[in-house]
Length: 242
Image 1 (spheres, rainbow, N blue to C red):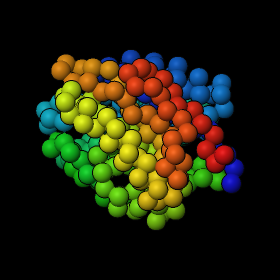
Image 2: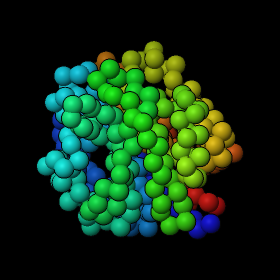
Image 3: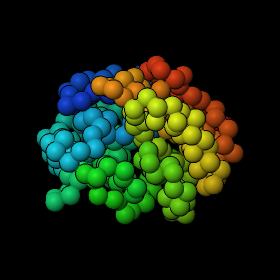
Image 4: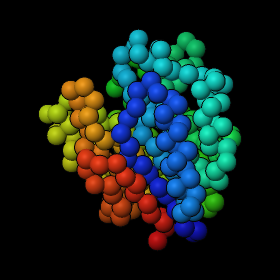
């Protein structure tokens, strides 16, 4: 199988600053292009900033044909790689915690969180798989990692790589509880499915919450082959298939 160069980003979140995210995204994708990256992965709800309450989600959520998504595609248009990026999606009358799969100036499809732990979001139902070179990849989002069957559904659809946009921004005592459990969950999902796993998390603090960062790439046997250190921004970069 042909190797696939994967870059997965650990980034401080921005809230209600799509222009700021797009500026940073352009910089990160240029970095990827200089290193021949095939697939770049960014955190959960990265585009508008994560929220769980209905009023904030309703204000931030966008449709796939919105001005915001057109601006996103204008940013990705010049780069020759697949991009997985989390955003709050509106499909009238509901809202979804989704990740877009973008190739150049096209949205190939979306995945919506199957097990949302946010009251504002409706549960997604589909387990799409996307082809890239000789690889097939799918997406689970954050809390989905607690449910083995959600990863297995992607694997049964032919995936050999699972992408996990995360947002572990939590109250300090809860963040400490999940500090190692999040990594262990990703390793378990790799072993369960026989797939490679790549996660992208936020890092830093926001109001009273903190995220240590859980950004890594895991082999199908559960061994971590690349990881961003806790507490800092960075990129895990790896040729999967080695």
